[in-house]
Length: 195
Image (cartoon, rainbow, N blue to C red; front, side, top):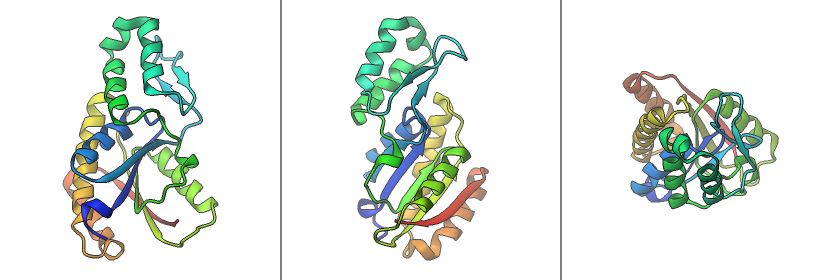
């Protein structure tokens, strides 16, 4: 159970654009079996003003979003880092995915904000478990900006390394999370749900 290769991890934020993708990239490079998702109704990213976000459907490719922003305002979206972010994303996978639509099974679901954590727990509890296997849902609050996404990816990667070293994840998780919380000085939420 505890080797890096067979631990199935999902990293989840709201739009599967910044925080979950940065962590996805980090974990992939370390050899983890990882996927990333969003839980929102739509993919929302900053626009020309705070009240004018760019909104896309899940499943719209990162490449299409990149081209759309390029046409709208190349200098704005270069300056705020969105084109760079989308360029990274399209090297990892084709398009943002919605967590509530996946059929995949995971051992650990890591969310990047409390609202997303609540949505994931609620969704997992609302569906009928098919295998009754335990899934750990863990939240680490990460602000949705490029710098925090990078810090968050380091933290998530560190946590996953600790988890992968456990002999018995279900028995050791509380201790791992307690040590991690003390080390990173960020509150961690944890729930157990069933697949």
